[in-house]
Image (cartoon, rainbow, N blue to C red):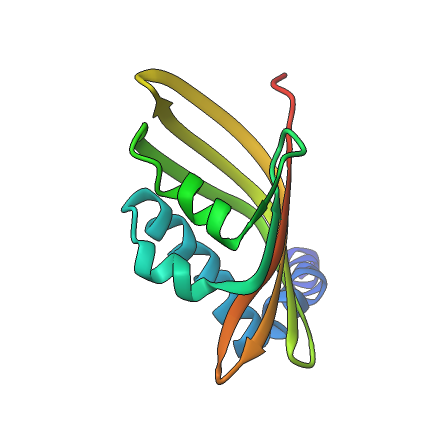
Length: 145
């Protein structure tokens, strides 16, 4: 009986976060995954639509990119063998604004040299014309242990 009670208590503690995740929050998390896939596949059309005209990205080194600079960097031919893995993601929605935080472990070759980074990120989205667009993103590199 004590084990059953413990199980019920654990479900009540951990399940509400799953139950309360809205469809919009789920959509934003899926959009993040689609973003990673588009980056890996050099899908410029997807990225062009995802990035708002006022898009501003601050990378792990503190360099700032506007939309055109971001697209140029994301689609640069000297980046090959790109991979990504998203973890620890959370989405919050405030009306027509969404914020997603998480960790992105990326791998790639730049000019033939293998690179691997863990980036803690915050992405800000605004819903326009029925679709989400990223207006700002910032990443901070997580030091290797």
